Amino acid sequence: MYKDDTPTSSNLTLTSENISKFALQVGFNACAVAPVHRLDDDAEFMDCWIAQGLHGEMDYLERNCDKRYDPALLVPGAQAVVVCLLSFEHSGRDYHRRVKSMLYTLEAQLKEAFGEDIVSSTHQHIFCDSAPILERRWCVEAGLGFIGKNHQFIHPTLGSMVHPGEIIINKPLPISNTPYPISALCADCRLCLDACPTGALRNNVWDATQCIAYTTHHCLECQLICPFNL
Image 1 (tube, rainbow, N blue to C red):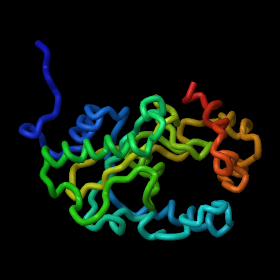
Image 2 (image 1 turned 180 degrees about the vertical axis):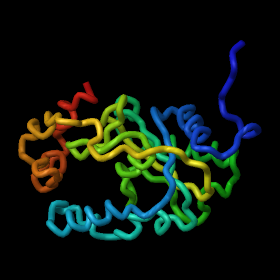
Image 3 (image 1 turned 90 degrees about the vertical axis):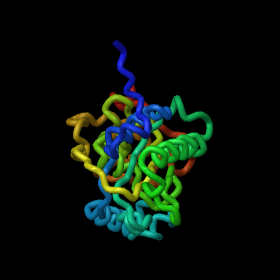
Image 4 (image 1 turned 90 degrees about the horizontal axis):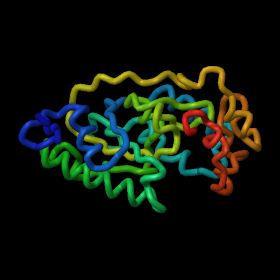
């Protein structure tokens, strides 16, 4: 007999698995949850990277650093980051609008299932490339994948052609994921490093001032060559 495991508000407890079921039902390709904490290693790396001027003219990265490294300062009472992934092929021409629309739908379902107070009523808590939050790192913290040598987030089956979106929730829940080590699955591959036409990926660092995608937004060489995208 067919068993309907569609989540409903009457039979659920707040778990990362149930949140993921809602996200997949909304249409996201993947979803996982990470506990809120300060990203100390990323803070040290970013501060050094910015100090070297490798961020180019992205002056916004110099602001709100404390909030960028700690979501609890961005959204008071934050307990967890719900990270959702939507593949390029499903995101349409305006991925910001598409991902955010889906996140708001997911938020409504989470409120109905787990209570209005699951999210902040006073602070913005839905994000898609629009706030001081280290999106790729939270993808890793949630156990969805790893950061490749091309400095892109890579999902083991979806590849790097994905748009992340986040909902910061204010209720604690059991979380049992394990973040991937940096470049965990790249091994000895260096296809992206060799494919970069300007050397923006040399020395294990992304130099935005040399990156064509940063200057013109029309280069995907380091992603197109990646075996995870083939």
